[in-house]
Length: 87
Image 1: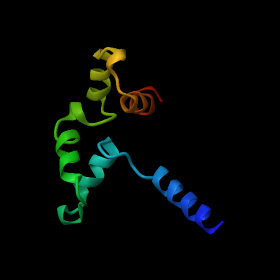
Image 2: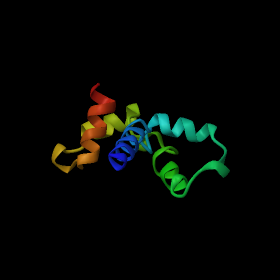
Image 3: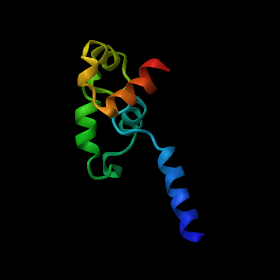
Image 4: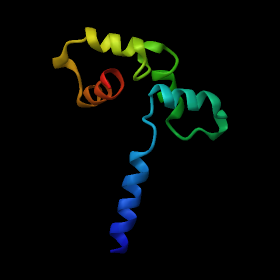
């Protein structure tokens, strides 16, 4: 029972976190001191936050996804598109 509660807590905490590379995540990282970033944050920031067209959920990102063949989308892109561009 104890292990189940711990696992459930981890799942709930993970579900509430902001997706790395999203606009919300990029804005939070811009406000945060670079010394507080964890491993991999700089790479994700460079890939998704420097150029607006790569920021997941940005207007330009959604437009780029609209132009991309639906058959070429990854499962992650499909979910991100539904979350940020449709809803």
